[in-house]
Amino acid sequence: MPTAETAGGQVDVRGPRFGAWVTTVVLAVALVTGSGWLVAAQAVVFAVGALAGLRYAPYGVLFRTLVAPRLGPVREREPEAPPRFAQLVGLLFALVGAAGYLIGAPLVGAVATGLALVAALLNAATGFCLGCELYLTVRRAQTARTA
Image (cartoon, rainbow, N blue to C red; front, side, top):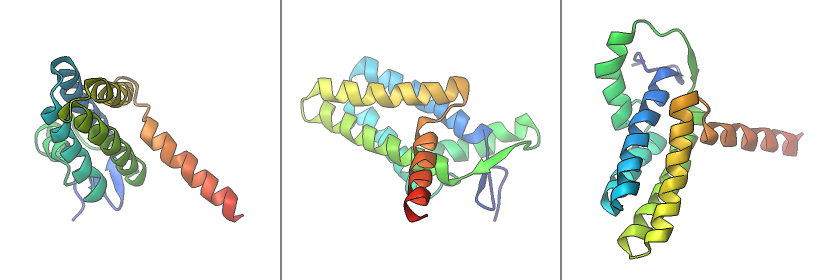
């Protein structure tokens, strides 16, 4: 059943941006503390969003239940596919970051976590989603290739 956040393959644009703010905080804390387990927890959040959908992602649930009701009606929606792809990209960086920290390669962990943090902060602060743009670029390349 469609919700305030997801309706017919569309998402409330405020949901992914809220998720980006939470992700920014989580990754910043992980980067400062060097916690591979915290990065791994964020990887789980990314995995749920990428594989099950934004409606099931923990930050999506939090947005839908606690934040969206206080914001008023949805004014703008976007297709769910680009943010889901962005979750997949975040998952890849988080997996590398967590692995780096947990196997004793903190520089690898910090660089991968830092890159994910920059992308999340950019989305949170400006609404510009690097993973979404990557998705659109890949789609355009596929379309040009088949034309």
